[in-house]
Length: 148
Image (tube, rainbow, N blue to C red; front, side, top):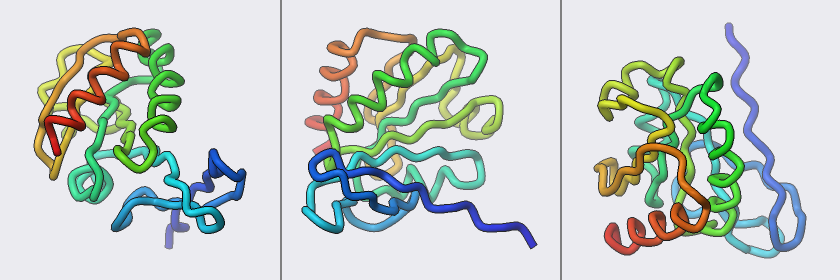
């Protein structure tokens, strides 16, 4: 019998309290102590994408990436910072295309990094290639507004 994956622990950006934050859950994640919104960052693969991304109660930014991709590695910390800024308003789901070929094919990924904005499991926006943080911030804001 395989061991269950441990539930990630996230420090609250407001008070520092450590909170367990499952990759898939109902509602918006909040700190158990101060009730501030928590940044929701999760990894998904072909087997978990439906539960983690498509059924998310929040809009989702899907980061389709690969560990060998230099621009992907550059983009990752920018996306994680933006996930903290947009805590409570969107979820960042990271998908390694080498480990999730069906998900990559579903979105017809031809170049990485590719970002896909989802709302209720439907694509509402796409960004191909690395971009500066300010441009990505605007892209996420625009997709959150159009998805509302």
